[in-house]
Amino acid sequence: MSLVARHLEANGIPTVIIGNARDIVEHCGVPRLVFNDFPLGSPCGQPNQPEMQRSIVGTALDLLESATGPRTTMQTSFTWWQGDDWKAKIFSQEQPWKDEESQKEWLAKKELYRQLKKEGKI
Amino acid sequence: MTHVRYIDKTREYYKSQGYEKPYGWANFDEVPFTPLKKPLAESRLALVSTSEVAVRTWDDQRTPLERGEGGNVYEIPSDTPASDIYSQSKSFDRFATTLEDVNAFFPVTRLKEFEAEGRFGSLAPTMLGVYNAYSQRKTREVDAPEVLSRLQSEAVDVALLTPV
Image 1: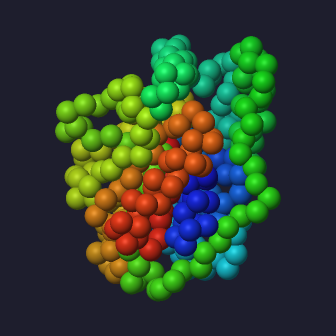
Image 2: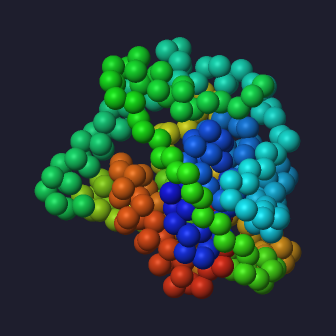
């Protein structure tokens, strides 16, 4: 995502990212980021909360206009409706990032990618 | 509470899962910047997303990789009903949230509202999805230029990007 934003920006198209993983996006370095401190999966707001989503998307539109240089991050004031407990649990043994089936699927896709690359198909 | 350090967390997590080599997150000193060329109210905006969005009415729901193809950039017409769009992603916090509302990660309905109110000029006729390339080099050298050329072909002025 960040890599795409950088390429567009370098070629004359202003971009804004709305994201949840602030450290990853800022580590890469992007022109404009609206950071919403929510779990991965809900960058643009809580599901089924259109007013909140509107505010967050509106912040991104504002940032397109107001940013004067790269690495401009704007954090929204929203907090997750169930508190911050989710933060301590992610990527823990208690809550594996992917269930067994998705993990297998992920590894199979990675292997498929390697295979297709080897065959020169991608 | 401060924001999650995903880089540190994933490093520890995958080490505990037996992966020796830590993932090298992309990192650059220089960051490009382009100011708006015209007022947002006159600008054409495109929605671009890596949230693995798919359309329920597609005949083939497989990803390009699953079909044995290399292309990672794909199109969803902007007039597709939001209720037909969903995400196939498994890379989200399934303990804390859901992907049941497409506008929480692919805010097409919210953008149409802002467009109707004149907040920006127009939504580009086509929205773009970009699948994970499993290769940063491929994202930089193949997929990102592909996104650029598709946006240019629709005279897009600004882009809003969302992950899942």
